[in-house]
Length: 185
Image 1: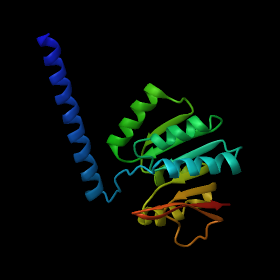
Image 2: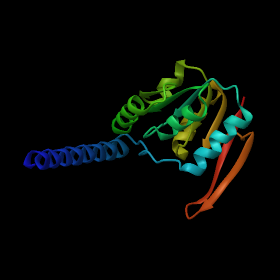
Image 3: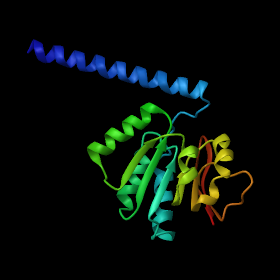
Image 4: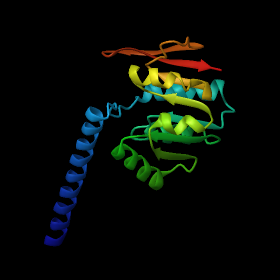
């Protein structure tokens, strides 16, 4: 019995150290590399984006999530749209590692995660669709790459110099109005 308690205490200490290291890494990345820490998009937004894809773009074969964070949205898209190859790109180490491990354990097989600056990664790649939940600053940078995709679905933040094909209002909460912006080439 004492060995079980000892093993449990060691396990809790290891998990705590990992969480502390992950938080330090995200703060350093946010402050010094001017990166935005991963912020989940929420179920309402995810379901709205997936519903839009299923309804209006049923033949999409390749989707990239620019700034995939912890990977939950990538895995949900891949599960709900099994005919598409879904790629999540994240620059921050800890969310990428969590995404990769979770995908290996739980799947699905039609998604993958890449740890790289998304804008460097997409320079020589083509995808049917990009989904993103980026800050205003990152959307300005992404704007010059928009023509690499047939469709871009942006959550909450729109391109500053490109008019969306459609805007879908999703909900309002204490943070304000939430919409998805659809851009088509």
